[in-house]
View 1: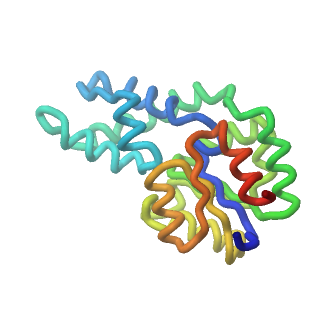
View 2 (view 1 turned 135 degrees about the vertical axis):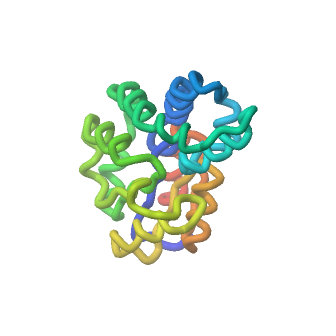
View 3 (view 1 turned 180 degrees about the vertical axis):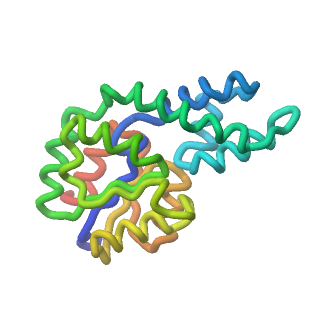
Length: 202
């Protein structure tokens, strides 16, 4: 595998097992509107996708169909719910040591469809923000994953030519590939450190 000059991490499902929290918060705020969102449905169809795309699908599939903007209006309440749940973020204990080692050899970035307010405070709370030279969030691009734009922007911010993308979701994997970068697929955050070490160091 070629030498990489940067590592671009997805956040949810890669750095931390937070997708169930996103699902639970959306389910909580959408239920009063008659929209039921299960974990199985979220995991299979919506993990890694921009929230607006998920809400468009849910609104169209509602009976009767709903205006998706009615669902999007619940986003501030969803954010508050998620931030509350992430006050004690479940990062792996060994993540700090891994990031410290990697930051000595590679430029690091987080590339996510989540909003900055959802990812930066947890990283700061566990003193992990210092390892990332850039954060690319849902507010930073017009086209989200699976479009290549988020990863292209991260590479540009880092001045990276041969970054490695670390992803778990289908939209994220497609985004990294569309950007023309090497992609390491992980199935869950708990597996990421070992898979990444093997990929980089053998």
